Length: 268
DNA sequence: TTGGTCAAACTGTAAC
DNA sequence: GTTACAGTTTGACCAA
Image (cartoon, rainbow, N blue to C red):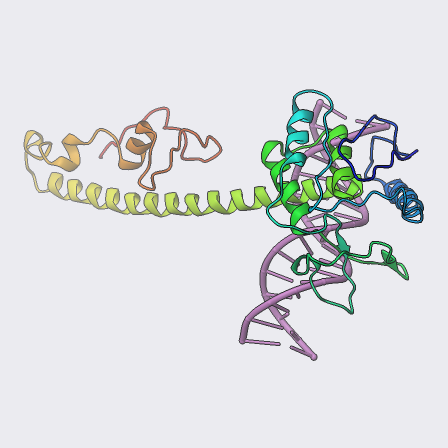
């Protein structure tokens, strides 16, 4: 049974008030369950007096339940949102390509069919939905089933949609992080290549001096031979920071994070 | 009109 | 059994 809300000041969310199970699997049955959920939603929509329509010019549902994370989520959903509009997302129609989020003054007709002859229609989240999801993501990058249900209910989305949004959001975060790390590694690589070239030149220089017949106590006074204990890259690793300013001690995944166990530059 | 980009949604798999 | 994740598909949108 769906716990209907209208003109909400508080949302009584008890597990089991949905027809769908709390767990939401990613198997083909998911879609059946989602369709069941949609059918239930459709039934609700056919009963306007019971239908839950959440507008942002109205107070958002007050969700006071549970402890810890649930309370955080409740606070989040209670927050006033930056712009006024419907929380209800739209299923974009391929023929009408107007972005619903740019027309937030219009109430989206959710009664439109979400599927057109089997072809899926793409949901476009509203700014408000995205905002709430983003804020929720800032607090926790994963959702437990209860939080998922709360968010889904408050945003008028299917739990599966909330779940998918969080998955995609985590993927985007990871992708960005990888791009940043990749750029830093590239810088490290360039610095090491440069160091390598310079060290080779130093070695050649020392070889030349040695072969010139100078006594060891003289050529050992050259900076290249005597003053340097470590090569620059290792020195950087020793201090924990490289030329790029990257704290390599923190990124243990990189090959530059660890200083070599033994280190000697022997010149033969 | 078309190609690129973004994001929602889907699929398969592995970890727990 | 459930969930997260990587990879993929697909639709919407935008600029040239």
